Amino acid sequence: MSSLRDRLQAKAQELGFALFGVTTAEPLHGASFYAQWVELGYAGTMDYLARNVDKRADVRALVPNAQSVLCLGMEYWQPTPEAADDKLRGRFAAYARGDDYHDVIKARLFALWDFMREEIDAGLQGRVYVDTAPVLERELAQRAGLGWWGKNTCLINKRKGSHFFLAEIVSTLALPPDAPATDHCGTCTRCMDACPTDAFPEPYVLDARRCISYLTIEHRESIPHALRKGMGNWVYG
Image (cartoon, rainbow, N blue to C red):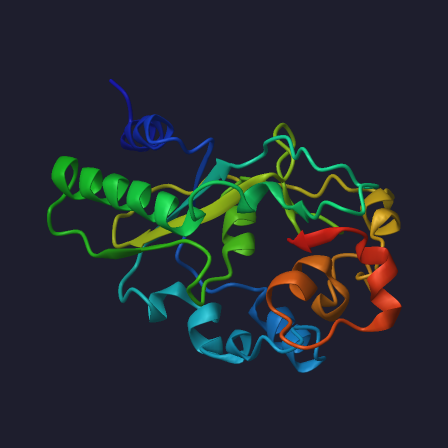
């Protein structure tokens, strides 16, 4: 007979989630690092990242009496047809192609949540999240074994790389946690060396003010001249 966790993982895979893991709803150790990162100005003009610090530190501030967090990953990689050296065609990040991933993933999260309430316990309390809430999803995913926090600040899965969206279901359902993922970066710095705008002041730290994704999406002012050459023909992401 399959375990409760196996049933949930099978349903998540049926809904299109390639990665699945469970962690506890205990406080997050990375909250202090996150607060310092914001204080150093690395968030640029993304003032919303400074809000709800208490909720980022403890998911139980979002879901009282939460017991566990289901952490999920959905792959988004696809070929990008624009050539890097084609100055007449702008390049778009793979994750930005197709329907808005927030809508796609949230619908699938609600389907999994409905399954949990219908098949396990109708009295469960919880919430679903994908990207827009005050949730430190990268640390939760690392704790749930989905991957490790790479030097490029992305979550990296040993078999699938880092081309996936993260999502969570925080609930009052008690489940045994998975083992956390361990760091496999070692002495490698290829990701940092490859960054054309030198957006990494040190390993595991991103200065968003120099990041192409930030400059093409979040930044509302003129792009600094010193960074334009490194941006190449990227127009989104």
